[in-house]
Length: 258
View 1 (spheres, rainbow, N blue to C red):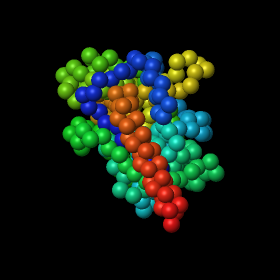
View 2 (cartoon, rainbow, N blue to C red; view 1 turned 90 degrees about the horizontal axis):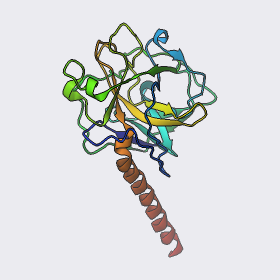
View 3 (cartoon, rainbow, N blue to C red; view 1 turned 135 degrees about the horizontal axis):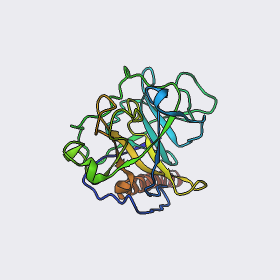
View 4 (spheres, one colour; view 1 turned 45 degrees about the vertical axis):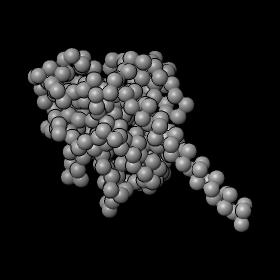
């Protein structure tokens, strides 16, 4: 299993472009509301997801106890997209999970072969969700619909100001009286949308950061715009596929010429 990391930066965000790609299936469109999938602290602020209804959802887990640290999205065979600050020393990716407290027949646990971070990544200086083993996360997957916060609003001084870049999407509510929000364990998970009721779900963003307390006035949840990093992800995957084919060719030649 490979991990592809994407990060917030000043890259242009093509959030209103529909982009089809043979390797990474990201069709980027903006709809309100959008749907976010996450393991949340409290089921009082979300709707429980139907078991295994979001098959691309990944839980990234660290050794030795394999606790949930971050979410991720299966975007291509053997490739997972998540947030760059979701650092994994050693661990696994678990797919097909709904409940984090026991082993499920549907789950598949795979080791991490490689981690690819965007070269511009710097460890965050803005508040982000503390994906720690002490954070309380929900036992089962939940979902929540959030409205889009206009970029010009989100970059105001009393919101996120300079911490929000053009390659980011803000989602949520103005005041903390509405508890629907992201929290611990959500980082790296997908923000997805649907063109119509029968259309396929499309990855639109990657959960990035929010207030340390999870809910604050004028501090909506912030996502990396996935479309801003499609060229980088294409290059990473193609380069890895080329290297694999080259190694196989060299290996075959070695045995054929013996």
